[in-house]
Each structure stands twice: as structure tokens, then as C-alpha cells.
Image (tube, rainbow, N blue to C red; front, side, top):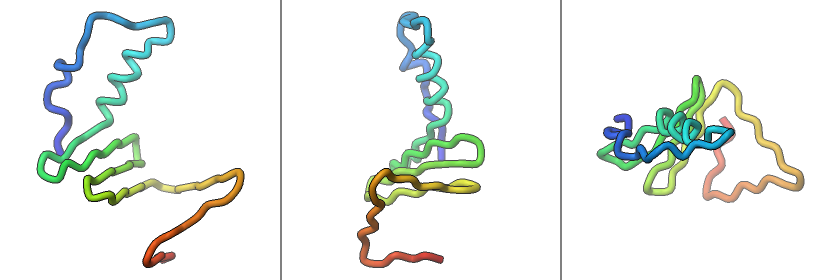
Length: 83
């Protein structure tokens, strides 16, 4: 995967506020990669990553993954592979 080629193209005049939102947005851009061949978007932070593919597939990777819901978690698929 390749990093975003020209991050400078996203630079605008200094519009930062007290909470420095612009710096946070640029830090997020540094974590993002787009595969030029497949168009897959990957956000990586340390040992965890989230990949979104154009065909609808989503990959979540990490040392430990936790799901929480106030009500319910529904799984709807042709096949659910639990291991």
C-alpha cells in the first residue's frame, strides 16, 4: 500500500483553533493509506488497523477486539466463521 502521495495538496491557510483541529486532521491523514490498484483504504494506528475495500469487504485487525452494545449485536451473513 502507498501513503497518500501529496499531503501538501490538502494544506490550507492556518485555520487552527484552540483545540488545533487541523493538526488532528493531518495526524489522521498520516495514518491513512490508499492502495492505488484496489482502492482499499487502510487506517493504521500502532498494532491495529481498519481496511475498507471498494467491494464492501471490511477488515479489522488488532491485538484484542472488543464489541459493546447497549442493546444487541446482530450478525447477518451467509456463513459466520467463529474460528
